[in-house]
Length: 323
Ligand SMILES: Nc1ncnc2c1ncn2[C@@H]1O[C@H](COP(=O)(O)OP(=O)(O)OP(=O)(O)O)[C@@H](O)[C@H]1O
Image 1 (spheres, rainbow, N blue to C red):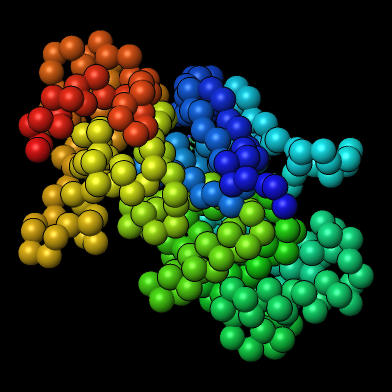
Image 2: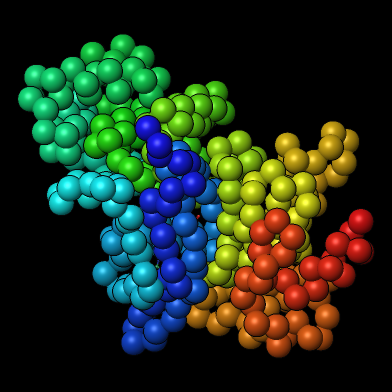
């Protein structure tokens, strides 16, 4: 086919989100840049409040009413494609109940998504809906297709949302913690499904989670977010093996599967800063055990590092100390 996996589909450059609360403006997301290629998954990881959801919402163009975005979000068209064959982007949200239509049976909801985006007949769309429901692990799919959203458990509702998103045959799928509320078996099943669909269809994914183990499993590249910016990025395996930023190292030491059996789980002391009062300089410095006086004047911007990029000006020192 001649399509290379490295062909970028989505390019995000210097994205910022500005919010206003009672006349006070602040930027909980700032200078975020990344790209994702066909068949590739970029994992975005960070603690609650780091700006992951707002980043995805800004990419999709659905910010809260008090928010606006700056920067560039570009969907790169298919090479040689005709007009009208623009790339499609879909998103699976954290809370499926808000995205489902309460007055539509879930099978119809999925069929509607399939029909609007792929132009097939209603009959074919209905059959496809049941197939998709079974793909995402919904038991007795034909029967469940006739259920109303409120009749389903949270886990089933989330799988309906994933089926509807996949039904639109997107080029890019944005996932905001889609499996966090689900039990581990279902979570593993959905991660495998998404991985398979991404590989088979060349679908690009941006997958947000606070769980480094999930990100480690699903993504080839990783972006670690802290206080509104990306602080480290690189190949997932490499970053997990040799974190260059103390925040990434801290997250790793709080991830059970990343810690060797028997070692105590650490937690990063303190909590993330309020976006209305980000610290100057390195925003992680107040919680960082490697912080030095110069960190209060550090640029807090990504700079190239071996195999990726880090925002830590003391990355070399950190590596020495922690080696
Ligand atoms: N509509 C809003 N109005 C005011 N503040 C908001 C709004 N939406 C988000 N924020 C704030 O912006 C920051 C980033 O929020 P965001 O939801 O992107 O974080 P997150 O990393 O996705 O965390 P979580 O996993 O908890 O959703 C948080 O401090 C949050 O409180």
